[in-house]
Length: 288
View 1: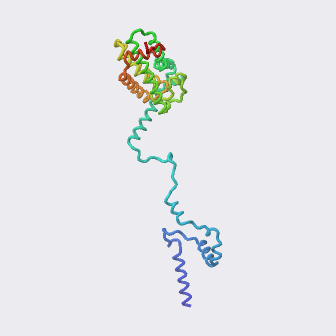
View 2 (view 1 turned 60 degrees about the horizontal axis):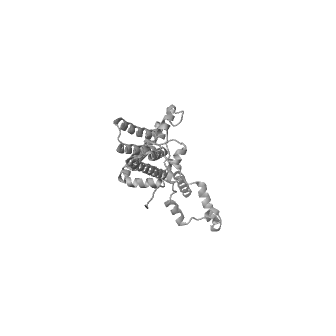
View 3 (view 1 turned 135 degrees about the vertical axis):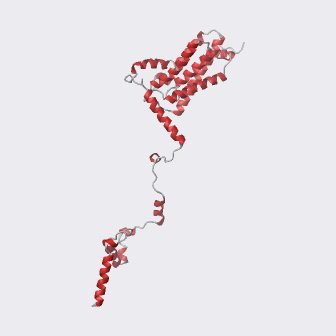
């Protein structure tokens, strides 16, 4: 009798210690059904235990470690740069300001815009800075000029215009920047290879022509001021019409001044200009 009482007390003590309130929070709760199944499988013997289809599949030792070591990679476009450089932040900020300001200045994009009533005026003003307009005008003046000095200036101006068109077209084709507004280029834009936005071809041409005329023509002060204002308005008109950004206009002005400096460096003499005129008019006679 005392032996049976001691066994009963030990069993009660085990039940009390196995209650939920005495289990550690760091240990997972054991499922009694899993324990019963595990005990039954042990009693069933090794032959029955190996017939379980879930136990037949054993993972290779290197397979799990590879999965733990190589987490799934996210696409690069979905990754966020947590430590951008100061240069990248500055460039992105300037680009955002440029786009916002260019869209705000596009007041003549459509006839329904805020300045849509004067759209034709700015279109005509932009036409005065077109490359085809200046090349045709220079050729007409060259055919009517009778002095060697005038022909020398006009031939160098013609070469400067061709250089400006080719350089701007090459840079635009390389950069391929779109304008602030989705607009289809016109026929003259395709002819002059002024399809993309950066740099502004009209601004480059206006800056180069105005600097060229100020250096090689004797003009009164009001005309000189008017020429500078014309060059600035031609570049600004393209921004108001929604064709170019503000930075496109600024870089166009800088590129036009660079073209003028280059033409001044390789300035053709009067004899060279006369030779080119003779070749162009098919009246060149190299042999007497």
